[in-house]
Picture 1 (tube, one colour):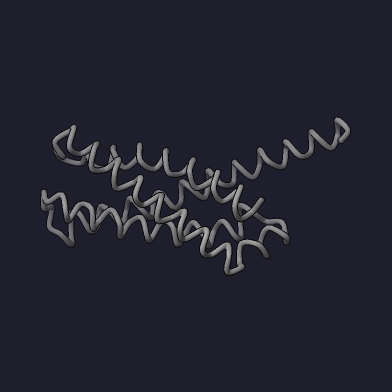
Picture 2: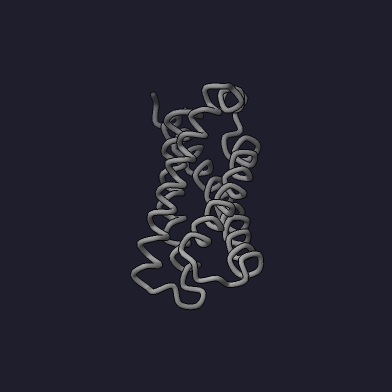
Length: 148
């Protein structure tokens, strides 16, 4: 591979990661907004760890659904990547990766809110930390196993 091809390949990857981050920010807003809606309104601000876990799962599901759709159209844009992303194998890998991501999110939320004592809106700060970890997990797994 010549220098120009290498540069174009790195440039393409850089922009792909940039689009992934933008999509991640949008999906974080959907995820955290849904989490806050369920935690503060639907569950009436309950301090229950179980209801926080349920609200976290609902928000995560909303965010991951949006992420899959936006990833197909905005992040992994090459036709060969889109074709792989729509296959049955890709859907299974996406689902398994998302379930692991949900597990990581729930673990970080549980540990973070246990340490902080779940005061006020602290769970949203913990959610930001969980999102950064899971966002890295999502990009790596999707890039390696689906959209390679």
